[in-house]
Length: 159
Image 1 (cartoon, one colour):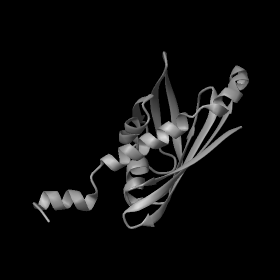
Image 2 (tube, helix red, strand yellow):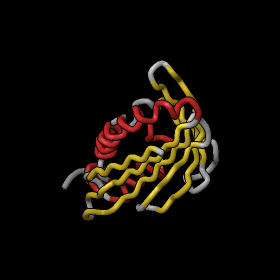
Image 3 (cartoon, one colour):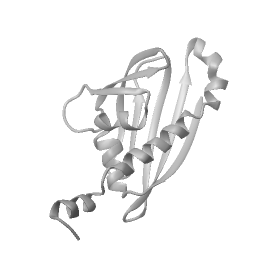
Image 4 (tube, one colour):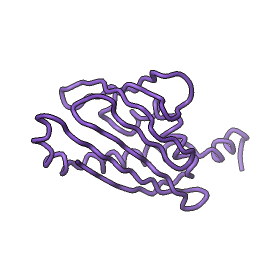
């Protein structure tokens, strides 16, 4: 089993972070993981436990479509997803803790279990730092969205 954890402080409230990574995950995921070309929703309605989607990825020359589902959805606190197919089991859980009213800490916990011949590459997969890059890109993507209060101030014309 490969297990990676990382945390990042984000200059956005827990609500804003959760909205970006969970409520609007289907639209936003390609904004923080460059290998993800698109995510298609396959279940109707808002994201919730049991919601499913198909992630279209381009890893090097290999293009793949991976079905996944939401396994946890706790507003402003945590969201988790698991891969339903593919060459390994993959699960990610993201928890958010407020630092103050305008910033939060995002903790990312990834677990992967390769199957078949991929198990031979497990030592290399353990050393892969892609998760660190993705976490950094996630912070940049979330912080690029105007704060709700800031957007309202601009729309109102000032102050």
